[in-house]
Image 1 (spheres, rainbow, N blue to C red):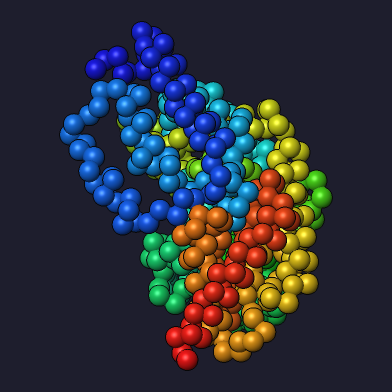
Image 2: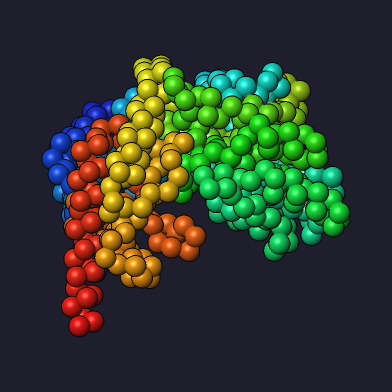
Length: 480
Ligand SMILES: *Cc1c(COP(=O)(O)O)cnc(C)c1O
């Protein structure tokens, strides 16, 4: 069994095993014709159920053969140009290489004495990101597991910086289309059930700053204490970007912490064409970025950035065994002092390899391509009488629904769209997402694959229309 430990005597086994795995994945990527096989839970669950975890195979090849059945064959493949559903990107090869290196060396980024150069690399990437945002000389931050954790940490800092300790009085103001992790964070931070104040959005799904101003004034009158305004730079459903400069002005006027959730929109930080769409982000007190969304990085890779490094002290605890206080005066850099996590992956290495091989412009070009594709897709949809499309895209999301001329009952249209999404998933021909707009069911393309073409978009729209028509035809037959 010792032969399975990665060390000086097992280098050859390591090389062979990992290469064998890489070969399997490479073969899979080369031959995957559809983003999904359409497998059902009922079909797949028994395959996994049958595996006896107490009877190991003692053989890498056999385990990989088995993996084909339990996972690889039926996985949902984000690299496929007709995977158009959620905020999952195809990944860039330098980052995958980084992933292989970081898990083999297995540094832990909580302390200098478990990471050495890893800590300095992460710090340099944080500085690089903060500079791209324009947060100023006192900025800092830390890598996290994802946007959810980044938002939680930012709101923890905001709560600690708030002007009251009375948790019941604290309010977080955010648009009605902001991410649900804001609600979750409020709960975890011990705030009251009404802590999150939902600000209405305009026609383009952007926070209405007039309403924000009104709510800030109302809070003051009602003795409530706004601890943060969470602006969304790229809403999950629409890619809409809140008016950051106006929100920044209001935050300054009322002395409220401004958090920008740029989990999705952070790709614009590398953009060569559309960087101006997130102008105003430099006024933030804290920013969430998800490199695993618009920087084409494998999950997980995210960071929370802050304007003032000193605010990170709210996440600091000293443990004698790990990061004793004296290390601060000895100037030993321990990232755990800034993080909610303790043991932590060296995810930063993936971004490092990406920037060293491709450069930020390489990433920015890929993101610009999908933004431009979304604009072309929007034009296609707007010109197609079969579809109703909402919100001209600021990033790479299209939200639309099939609206047959002959059917006027909105509930039937809802059902036809829900059916089309399900039928498409079951066919495996394409994967799309869905959401609700003004109470009605819509479909959604999140375009993050530069390999997707307008021809793919047209083909998938035809498939959707076909499934929806079939559903409506059958329900007409049932009714008559
Ligand atoms: C995806 C997303 C999040 C959550 O990020 P995870 O990495 O999935 O935890 C937060 N905010 C926005 C706007 C998002 O799109």
